[in-house]
Image: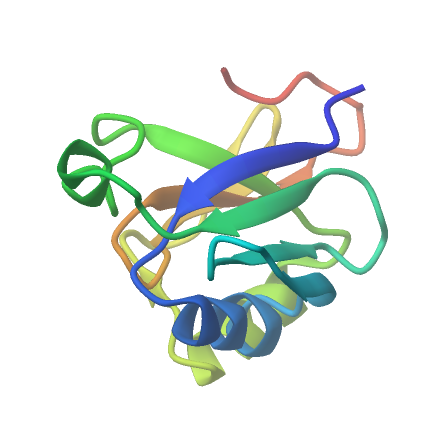
Length: 133
């Protein structure tokens, strides 16, 4: 089981605000570290894997903020009610990069997080078809 995925961020507090307020995640942990950093984990309220929000420690890491996957969608946020989540996220200022569309695997739209990383908001089709890779 994968428990966390690291996501590079410029600032812990602005990232916490975005993921909690705009995406509806919960703050699971925010603990100080001996090196002056913080161990910050956010994730969907329904459990599952979390995002470890990490400030870069090296210049090459700083350069990857917002482009951790080379411009591809890197994260998939599953929804049980796409229309409601899409409206809520728009109202919270989330920037969608396309209009919602229906695919064989479900309803989907790509959005950008506060740094420009690309995500899918997706409600799987009732048939249980596999999500894209």
